[in-house]
Image 1 (cartoon, rainbow, N blue to C red):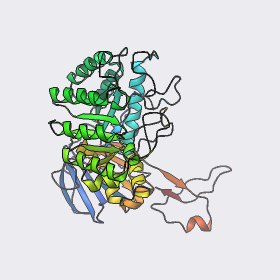
Image 2: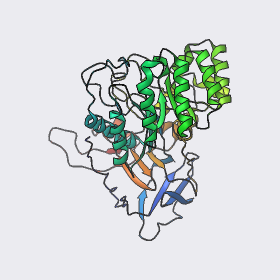
Image 3: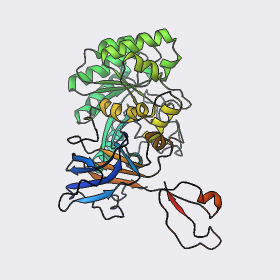
Image 4: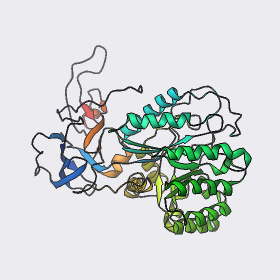
Length: 440
């Protein structure tokens, strides 16, 4: 996928998905509660929801048949790494394993960062994430080159999805941190940028925290800190300071909390909840230092009242060369390994993730934002298990569509398999003879 990839084409049924479309009817969709409905979108809002077959499109509007699809609020990605995405095959050290003292002399190619960031964002959009928050490193000696590249990516994605970068310095304290403190202020002045940090890599984590939260408070922006969360003293300091900050504070991936004694972790979680600090966990594993793995104690945090969202983290970079960037995979892992019910797991990548990003709530009800994901399947558990075919709606129009087809040779076993649709195709020389086609 290249950075200049064209906008997705209209669906096969002729539904117009261009910017000129003002209305869209999603017909015969199934909701998570089992109802079969029609959903009419006008502009960027859900205008009406009715029994399947009861609604028609607005005159001149488009229609998409969602028979066989489960219609859900669109997920969001609260913790991506846009500047390192898709860089696993690049030469040099892991992007987040290098010194932050100005000695990192590997060139930073803004055009290359923009190309990879755009490709990664489109990949995640195709998975269903219509909003993304992406951590981007800023550093002494390299300035804001990567951040500027991601900001260009954001502009190029206008109308397809929302991308918000987090400016992430690492060294903010002492004389050595002077340049990156100035860079962080410069970054948030550009607008639409979250104040970030990596306190675990600073000799003075508490001072680093204070510097980030001070910049966030000065400019009225949220703060998002990349941390393992394995220091209860630092977490207590964070909770005390975050309670005084008007903007939201998010930390993650916090896998280190799971390594603390349960009583200590429990007290830390209670302080975070009281201060309104949200935690973004990464069910597929760490995304910072190469080899870092583990997941935050989701059950403990939720029990203490902490808002817990789930993200994807590394997307095929040196920290995780096989990362998928798929919010439904994160939900699948929370359900299969984290002990959450499918509804709770999906909520972590949709409702909770959107809340962490400061976005309005989405429900499949009249008046709510038209940010939706249709996945072929009938029940949420099945969708999390095999989420192949997807249709993504952002601001009331289809912006991405993925179709998967499974084919079987003619046999008694194949004929006994359940299928969603069947077609015939001519036999291929030496291949399967005209057999059933199963759309997944």
